[in-house]
Image (cartoon, rainbow, N blue to C red):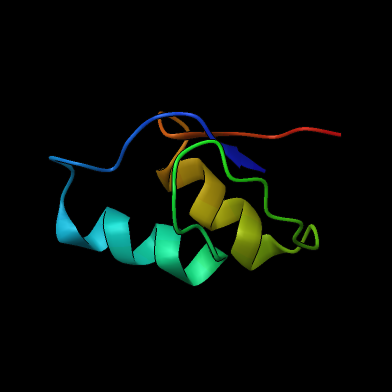
Amino acid sequence: MRQYKSSSGMPERQRKTLAALGFKRMNQVVEVENTPQIQGMYNKLKHLVTIEK
């Protein structure tokens, strides 16, 4: 996953979800396993992150 949009101005809950996925800065790429929990997090952050293969 890659964070392509800033979390500035987003609700605290979304910022904490980004942190739980391991994101610390813009354009950072984080490798995570495809589990139902990760998919749920992605669904909440579709507007901030993208999936790269």
